[in-house]
Length: 148
Image (cartoon, rainbow, N blue to C red):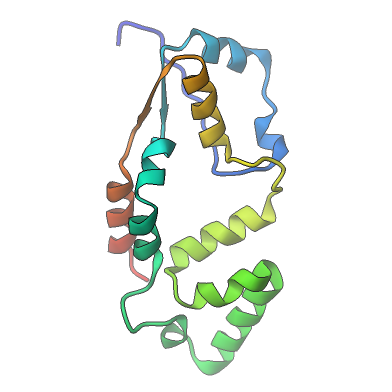
């Protein structure tokens, strides 16, 4: 590349601590013409139904098929404890997404958007081009290829 490129690792988090960065990040952001995220967050909004459908375990499958009764009871109890009313959904979705929900629950929910989306919103407001390094379809396919 001929132009300077900056790499800033972000997380899908709403925790206020992730939004605190030094002036060098602001300077790099201001000087950038393009902001590339893992995904173009605007594109993900167009595929909400496809994303939701992909989250579910294969048709006719629930989480209890992967545990003995004691283990399943322990898993469901922990999910209820940590995720509250969302827990029953986790018996029907792929563990990958349950882990993402658990991770987000562990961190703060101080912002209305995750850090990735925040950077992209700021980029759009500044007239910068926003691109995704992957498509939602590519991510869904990768998750679906992972063993349950």
